[in-house]
Length: 293
Image (cartoon, rainbow, N blue to C red):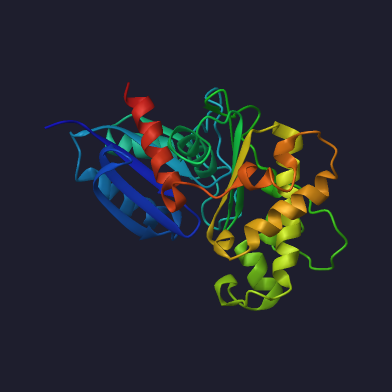
């Protein structure tokens, strides 16, 4: 039997586990609910244990923040995270020990950025940025074909939101960071409704577009990407992507003389993903393939 790759996408509300030859050749896949760390990881291990002896490597695309410095003792584990019950969870070490396979790990947004650059909407664009807006707000950056790691990985979703709104934000660390005011939990706290229950003409969507436009402009100024991909449950709202493009142009204020940042150019510069909700899992398969070499 041919060896298989394992892919794990660990998100704030759901977990995807898959085995196969690649992201487009999946043999078996399951979706789990993200609960406490111990219970969730036990379910994950049970799924992959069924393929013990056939797995050549496991790729993990996880919510963060993660310790990705291989010189540090806690490499491959979660750091202090807003996700209750998951801080300091030793993901790579535990999974490698219990499954007996090499494991590579990165943030879910970095993994999605890698996949979209390889197969999707950012193909041929380097550097590129991937932004996801859901339970949290994450930013993944790929430069010269590699996900950006340094002192940390990018955590630009926790940059301070720039306005004088009185909404206190929901981030337990920063309050009014962009994640704290524009994530799905923030929309729920602000309106009393789940984002999917809000009307298209609710004024909160203009507020949301402004915050996400700020984030896009920060990414442009910080990373000089050739394309930015936006995804996540919140971005499924009709018209929101167009509003984000307009808000980003306003925030940039015509400072950078590039046609890509014009009203027309923005339509091809800030885009929806080609892999849609599969980008994170596809990135996990890519991590596994690299680790298996």
